[in-house]
Amino acid sequence: MILTKSRGISNQKMSSFSSSTRIVFSKSLFTLRPSRAAIVPYWINQDGTLSFVFAVDSKYGDITDLGGGVRKYESALTGAIREFTEESHNILGYLELNELGCNLSITDGKMATIFVKCKEDTKYLPDKFRHTKLLGSQCGEIECIVIISEQELYNLTKNYRYRLKNRVLWSRIRRFYSSVDIKEVSSILKLLNQLQ
Image (cartoon, rainbow, N blue to C red; front, top):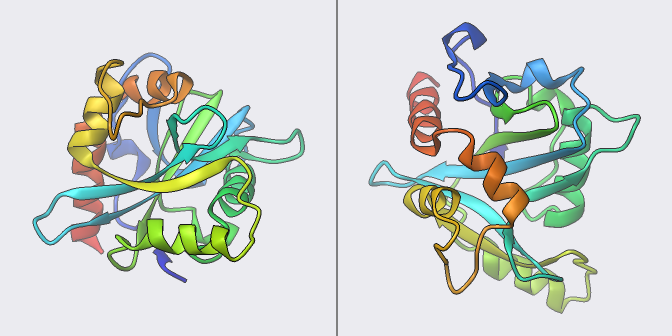
C-alpha cells in the first residue's frame, strides 16, 4: 500500500475557516453522513512543497477530486473509501477504514474530504492510470489523473477563471475548497509530516 496515516495533533488545535467548513481529523467523520465524500492523496516534495492527486472528469472535462456520492447507509469515511477505490482503480493501493482515523479532513457537513499522505513520490500515477485504462479497465467517470501543486490548488480554488492545462476545477468542488484557506491546510499537512 502506498498510502500512510497521519498522527500527532488533536482536533482542538485545528482551526475553523468559516461558519460552516471545519478542519478536523477524520476520526470525527465516523458518524458524519454527508452527501459527498472524497480522498485527496498528497505527498511532500523534496523542496518542501505539496503535490495533490486529482482527476479529470470524463464527461465534463473539469478537474475533480477522487470522490462522489455517499450512500444512505455509509458514513463519510466508508463512502470516501468506496468512491476513491472506484475512481482510482486502486492505483494507490487499498485503504482500510481503520487507517483513516488520524488524517486531516475538511467538512461542511454536506461534503467531506480526507487528505491521505502517500508513502512515496507518485508522479508516475497519471501514466499508471493511463496504462490501467489501456488494459481495458473501465475507468468510468475519470478521464485521467492530474498532479496539482499546492500553489495550483490555491489558484484553482480562489480564482474561478484560473485554468490548469485548459481545465477548471469543477464548480461544486471549487466552492467547497474555497471555503477553507488551502495555504493553511497545506501548512498543517506539513506540520503533521514533521510530527511523524
